[in-house]
Image (cartoon, rainbow over the protein chains, first blue to last red):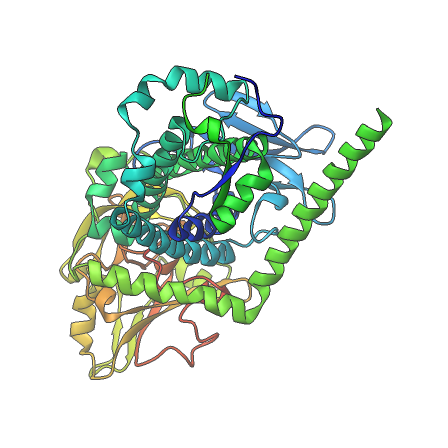
Amino acid sequence: MPEPAEPQTEIVYRHGWATRIWHWLNAFCLFFLLASGLQIFNAHPALYLGTQSNFSNSLVSMTAMRTGDGSLRGITEIGSMDFDTTGFLGASRDSSGALVARGFPAWATIPSYRDLATGRIVHFFFAWVLVASGLAYVCVSLFNGHFRRDLIPRRGELRAMPRAIGDHLRFRFGREAHYNILQKLSYLIVILGLIPTMVATGLAMSPGMDAALPWLLDLFGGRQSARTLHFMTMSLLVLFFVVHIVMVLAAGPINEMRAIITGRYRVRPEAKGETS
Amino acid sequence: MTVSLTRRGLIRAAAIGGGAALMSGCDRIVQNPMARAFLQRAEDLTMTAQRSLLDREALAREYSESEIIQPQRPNGSISPRDPDYRRMAANGFADWRLSVTGLVERPQSLSLDELRGMPARTQITRHDCVEGWSCIAKWTGVPLAAVLDEAGVKPGGSYVVFRCADTLGREKYYESIDMIDARHPQTILAYGLNDETLPVANGAPLRVRIERQLGYKMAKYVMGIEVVGSFASIRGGKGGYWEDRGYEWYAGI
């Protein structure tokens, strides 16, 4: 069949209002939670396994060391390995340009200067917003069929997964009306896996919640393990964010942005069927 | 080539500039008193939620002897330079007295021996610092509830204020808790740590343990207990040294 000169396109309504509101609220919350969380982390930039902090045996630590010539070096220790991370982790420049000891640098934290109290105020405020909006989204999505219709993978899709992975690695995207299998899986992992893990590990760090729900401690293997898992799950969310942005840019940023703002998405009709 | 480099340079500069503007904008937001007060409303929500979830008597987890793997890490004041405190410490706290005042029927002045003579409680618990670290230690002391009962709390006595001997920055440390925490079975005035006399670094001769809250609530070097109806007129009015500096009064999280 001859290819039409202009590929025919069609506008479909792709994202419901609940999905769009939740997407942007989430983006906003996760930004503030990340930057204030790094501020909180900077108060004691080390991670441990187990119930308590074994100060002589941390899993990860970011420290500053004075070298022989008097200059400050940032050292990141992972297990028994040391890395010089001066300028980024352990020691970085403050607003006056001087190297100071701090875990994550000023540009990554809220506030940019060292202020644990404010970091906590920001963190817990947005934690509440994240939990409230997440619960509302899950309720609406169960009710309006978004989960069933858009997110739960179909059997055929799982079988076609190797091809979907290959297509994505080559940045070859079909502009389909529905989420492809990799989108479905990654969104489900974020919604049902990463965000609930963030909330639960966060609560496990609260001495009040530990008295109310002691199983939280057993679930994660102790308060310090929960803190480490909180950090690792955060890293996975940042990884998701990076891949998400790359995919949006590769798949057509204007179309994707319009879809997540207005719900309207331009699809290629031939892409709706089988792609080959 | 030059064009693409320049363009790349421009994008890079825009990203860095945009990022810097974003973060300094965030600094300005959190410094704005109204925005801050709004964000801080979540504190009330946290306390209400935890208090409704928490049984009044629900205990913090207690651990076994084998989990004491290191000395209790001291933090904040670790060697007060206040002359009165130094004098008492040099004397082994022989003339130290705990005063119990405020809204009480029978104000008290208790010596260490008198406190040690009261029914004691020993607990191996996890100390959670607001900075993020945790440390397990064994604490021995007299339940605060017993001291309060000895003094007899008058109607209207809603909070217990701890007056401390140490100066941090330029002010004497102080803290406050409500009667739910004050009367909790694990809330003790500790004089022993890991089977020994409480060392100076950890708050000798007496510190409070409030096991369902963070470390900064657990005042060290306690000299006086004052029962009050409100702490609004004390110092910064927020109920504690760190609270006056922006930290939460309810530190269960």
